[in-house]
Length: 362
Ligand SMILES: Nc1nc2c(ncn2[C@@H]2O[C@H](COP(=O)(O)OP(=O)(O)OP(=O)(O)O)[C@@H](O)[C@H]2O)c(=O)[nH]1
Ligand SMILES: [Mg+2]
Image 1 (spheres, rainbow, N blue to C red):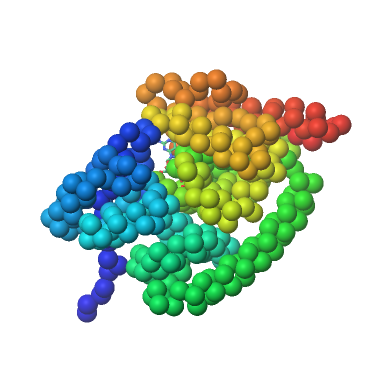
Image 2 (cartoon, rainbow, N blue to C red):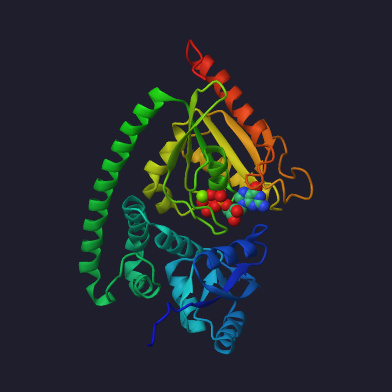
């Protein structure tokens, strides 16, 4: 019997010369996390997002000889320039934002995550419909909107707007009910939010601390929905831990908006545990991204504890620790440093909460 396997698409990534450190590795990891086979990583010089005409002609030849299905750009591009790019190289071109939206679409499992991702994709698509993006939404798989042809633009736009309003209304209800759940929890125990760059090891740490079995894997954006687990300190007092969606540099704006109720979990925490991969040579850049997202979502004033994870892999001790404290090195994988982390977490909570309220609850 003949069984059909899902087709694996082959891609070539294109990183701008002089992009930030780690840009090429990150776009490859993003592409692989989306299930694509990466045939090559090219670094090219671009001006306003577009390579020069000679380079574009060269890319068209590379596409012919490699048989790649499309190119993935490590940067974003205005719709008209993207069309020029695609017409010259003779295949679709996916921007970084589109790739991230696609990964989210593929990862979303729960109904709330699916609605959040659908909203983000539609918000992204709406202003681009006229530019002929509908075919792209239809051709790239995933669970997002399938746009009909350009002839129906007005109809599409109306449908999309209606769908966006419906999704916004539904997600507003989710936000309200999450707030109510949080209020109940807040009365029960202090909340520690695990946050950090995607793939830093947040879920592995959550599993280690709470003896949980949540999905942790070597892929970007394995976690989309917030999860809460209860742990107890040696005196039997409860602490709630919440694991949530990871951050990435230049996180698409529509995603931040659509995931507002998820990110709100962090802003309500009594302590923010910032987990980073201390073995990653770009840990400093990633930490700066995380700190800036925390600022953006209004969580900058919360007490924070840095957790230098993957200490089992790090050659040099804490390359990214510059000026950040308190900081505890751990390995969520082996358990090294976990008792120190738990102790610091408890003492920070005790200090913070006793300052906030009359009596200590920890
Ligand atoms: N060597 C080593 N690997 C680790 C450690 N902690 C996590 N990992 C690995 O790092 C990868 C990512 O771990 P996750 O826990 O899924 O990371 P995350 O931060 O939750 O990632 P997202 O949910 O995708 O944002 C997995 O392959 C883990 O096994 C550690 O301390 N040491
Ligand atoms: Mg995770």
